[in-house]
Length: 269
Image 1 (cartoon, rainbow, N blue to C red):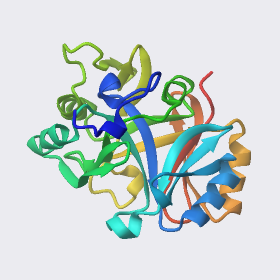
Image 2: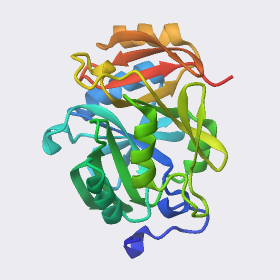
Image 3: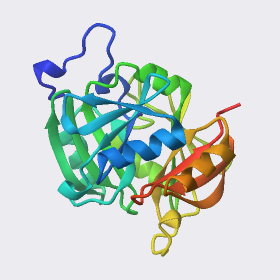
């Protein structure tokens, strides 16, 4: 792993190599950080804090716990406004090579930050994801266990997708600590340390005109009162795109004013 000395974990901290292959963060590429803050504060009740990365970056807090990152990078990186999941890896360069070997695309990076290295990629069906080598959020175990955020890949063939990601992220390998993969209820279910951390489901159409129907990683945020959250979406310049079903129950796909898609759902029972 190519972490700089400043990125080495302090006592009690977690590094990406300890949970390799697992989702470790979600991040939004934004065009206007202040406007993005106003929308997500109104819809999800988030507050925000600055980071060491500079004025274009912030961390979103839900009741004081870090839940997501936001970067005013859409214009600079020439990428769409979008929510993207990041997966923990031991070595960003080796993982990027495995992505290319399996007909995926590495669009940005790996780029060095103070606490690690990141790259933005797409699988062979076009679903965008990121990889992260370095330190994780100080509250990452709580993020994983309480699941204020969770992920589902909407893809054409979940088995084929699991083969791609398994090869890239070393899922279901014989290495200690590898994520486990199982087929349950028509979906591929990913577990890390026994906990469900992502699902891969069918139904995507690569050439669909509607981006909701194309292969993509769905980012779910839990809310206690879904109707109230949807009213806040509409009242703050967003759109309710579609009602959806999820393993947790009722949910809805929404779009923020800048075009970023995400899904609101009720907490796990």
